[in-house]
Image 1 (cartoon, helix red, strand yellow):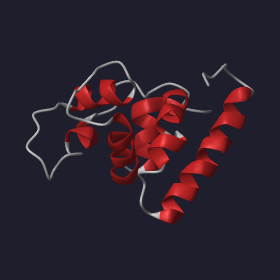
Image 2 (cartoon, rainbow, N blue to C red):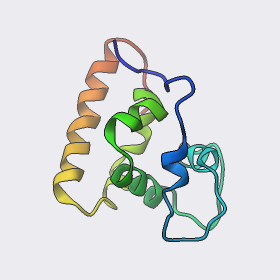
Image 3 (cartoon, one colour):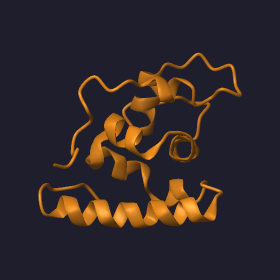
Image 4 (cartoon, rainbow, N blue to C red):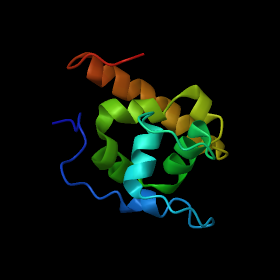
Length: 111
């Protein structure tokens, strides 16, 4: 069974620790809403934050937090260009295509 939707009650604490090197007073919910385009945070670049999420949070935790449908919105070319580890970026491109193929059989996905 695919985790199409976010796992109910999934902890957003990995997102709260995303900016360990800055003193932003952002909650995990703030960053969750921001990367999905539901909230604006003027001092952050959405694609750079998506890349930071992808490079910091483990894969299975990403699936729990975002679900596969919303996870695709983090795997855009614009965000992936900020992933500076070549192998990781290539893995995410492959993951995006695999997720799209799997979801095309079950749900309608945007873009």
